[in-house]
Length: 400
Ligand SMILES: Cc1ncc(COP(=O)(O)O)c(C=O)c1O
Image (cartoon, rainbow, N blue to C red; front, side, top):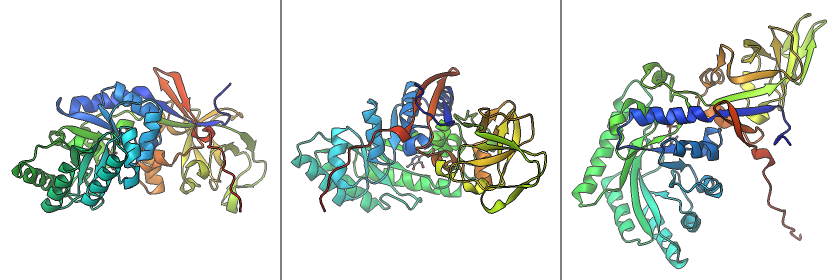
C-alpha cells in the first residue's frame, strides 16, 4: 500500500545532504567537527532522515532548537550527541537526562535548580553548554562577570557537566563584516577571561553556515551547519561569493487534479482576480496555503510543467490553486514541480523567497505536516515520512 494518498509531496535528495556535508568538511579545518542543525524538522526536510544522513556523511553531532525535537531524534534511534540550542524549562531537565540530551544554559539560578532536580531524581549528569551573547541580543550571558558566575554555578553542580561554550552571529552573511568581527572579538575576549580565571575550556563553537563559509579559521572545535546542509546559501551575497558549491536537497512536486480550456472569459479563484481568455488551458493543482505554499504567490509565482514555466493564476486557496499551461496539453495526473528542477528549468527556494518577501530559510520550513517527505538516494526511493498520518495519543475522558 502507498504510504500516502495525496498527489503532493516533497522529495529530499539524501545524496545532496551528503555532498553538502562533504563540501563543508573539506572547507573547514580538519580539527573542526560539524554539528548538523536539524531544528524545525530539518528546515522542513525531515530531521530524522537528514540527521542520519549528515551523521553518516561526516557530521559528529546534531543540534535542535528545543528538547521535543531532540526526543523525536532519540525515539527514532539516533544515538549521536544532540544539543538543544534554545531555552529549556528547568523541569524538563529530567527528561533531558533520561534521553541523554545536552542543554544550553546562561543563568545561574536555572543551573542550581537543574542540578537539584537531577539530584532529587537521582538521574545521570547531563552535558551543559553555556551560551554567550556577543551581539545577537537573543539568549546568553553578556559580561565577564555573568559568565564567571554561570561557570562557578556549574562547577558546584555535580549533575551538570560543562561541555561547551558558544555564541551565535547576527550578520555573518553580510558583505560588511564589521558586526561579525566585533562579535568574534567579544567572544575571544570572554574566552580569554575564562582562561585568565584558570578555567579549562570545554568545546568552543561560534560559526553558523555563513561564518563557516566566510571565516573557516573561526571554526574552533565545531561549526553549527544549518542552511548549508540543505544546499542553500545563507544570503544572496554568500551565494555570489562562490566559496563553496552547494546542492539543494528539496523538490516540491504535485500532480494535476483537473484541466479545462476556457471557451469564453472565465474568472479564476477567490476574488475573481484573474480572467482566463478563450483558448487558455487552466490546470488545478492540489496544494494550497494550508500546506505552507504561500498565498503571496497568488498571480505572481510560476510552476514547472513539461520543463517550462507555467504562471500561477488567481488567488492561492487553502488546498488548491490554478496555473495557466502554456506548453503542451495537460492531463490529470501529470507531474508539476513547484520548487526545484524540471528539465533545464528551476524554481529555486531563493526565487520563491524573493517573490514573497522573505529569506530562503522560511520557504521549506513553511511546508508543513500535510506534505509527505519522500527520500531518495542514488535516484532510488529509500523511505517516506508522512507527519499527517502519525498516530495521536488516545483522548482522555474528563467529566464536567
Ligand atoms: C544557535 C544557532 N546556531 C546555528 C544555526 C544554524 O544557522 P544556519 O542555518 O545559518 O547555518 C542556527 C539557526 O538559526 C542557530 O539558531
